[in-house]
Image (cartoon, rainbow, N blue to C red):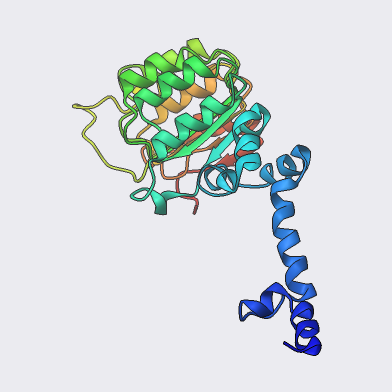
Length: 280
């Protein structure tokens, strides 16, 4: 073999010998950047995770690599306020109940807010009550698995609750459940109870004001939203007479309420008032 051939072979890179071109400077830089994601310091990873949706963390970002999994799993502050709203389209693809439980578990007892859509049932609420004694905000949207019985038991575990929403939860509202809320949650300031529509029922067969009379025991309320509720003038008067700190009242689509002079006088102190026939 000639000396020139040997010299040429020594100059060939490994990529040439394998029939590939050696990586360019851009490709080497890209590879280095990819490796750096796993090598980011914990505070940088945490900063990124705090900007993401909790469902996205559980299904994506929190699974990137070992360091990211650790950051997503072992930092309770990341799970202090859990927001699992806006994922109705994933209902049939993900176990949202299981994910909600995992999120609460990662909070290590520090969870102060849980907002879930299709992500809560009686069993989960009882678990939340055991794991989040300092809960201050609870929003349940379209949680068909929550019943009067389960909610009544769970709500008594949240004495610090200040903000409660029950929207499109059709099996919560009877059996005096809201009277229990009034007693169990003396610091409650905001309550939203939204139904999917207004239905006319015969008042001889149904107490239209059962929910309203329970709400009237929530004496510290500042803000109340009742949408599509069957409340009548009697129930609304009870709320206005007993919730003396009320500043905001929304009774849109509450068509059993007939605004008369008595109600208008009682509502005069309300700074933000939305009436039954106002548009959404």
